[in-house]
Length: 400
Image: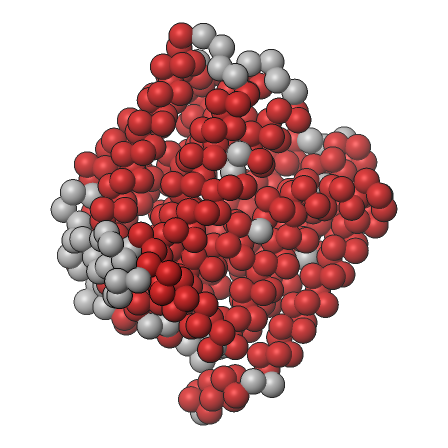
């Protein structure tokens, strides 16, 4: 049976598309709003970095909240919170100047709400469709999210330049209102079993520790986001400015990464390939991108490497979600997705702070090469740790 013929799939994809459309626009809007108030680049960094860092608390709270409320209630609450926050900042922007502290608070609040959604979403999808359709569902969700993530920043920048910051915030609020209305027919989804809120997170930790495949990917992802992604996001723009005189390439690279992600989400990987191994190899595939920038490689080569790596990462991300949804017990699933979020978006802001500090001490080139080398060693170690585990042997036996 085709995926779109399943009940609620279309409504779910529409609501998620609207959510991502608004969500992806906010970092751009925050940066433009802070800049329009006359604050420096450090002010922008403070709002986007420090303001978003405490949002990882949401990922820790989500599994505990799902003990008491349904996923649909979480969706509705998140959309309602966005509407209130964005409407409030829109009114403040309309009446006069907004202080930096307000923007930091808004950044924290919105990131906090967004971080709650990731573990909720992963477990909800597992209930929405049959297990044999999970791969297609995750792929469709990734494609919709990718397209909306490309459209969101451009649309909000256009509205901001045409109508101003206040109307741009009203647009985000409107998008979230439509998102809230579009999910009215969705089923509630399952709560996490058990009455003890702390037990919800413990189940996730126990599930991750029992699976060598889950454990090595979480460790590898955390190190990769801290080192390689941290250097790509913070040091590469400076090198492009100083060594290449090509700040324009930052926008090109963002577009290439987004388009590569959409393409990769459409690729279905053969089931016989080990998901943990694929994830670790995908992370390795991105290492040459920041390294090639600091070594002075031609920009066309950087662009090709970036596009190919983003496609590989996106395709394995879809397979990884399906792997978790089919291998982890349902009650532990929100907690495992929370750990997955913490190993990615939760760790990344730490790298944004630590990697530039290291570069100031060692130099930009040495800083990138050192962080890349550390990441490669850890990822290869994770591959080895999984390859010698009984879990990998069982997977090979199952294929044979």
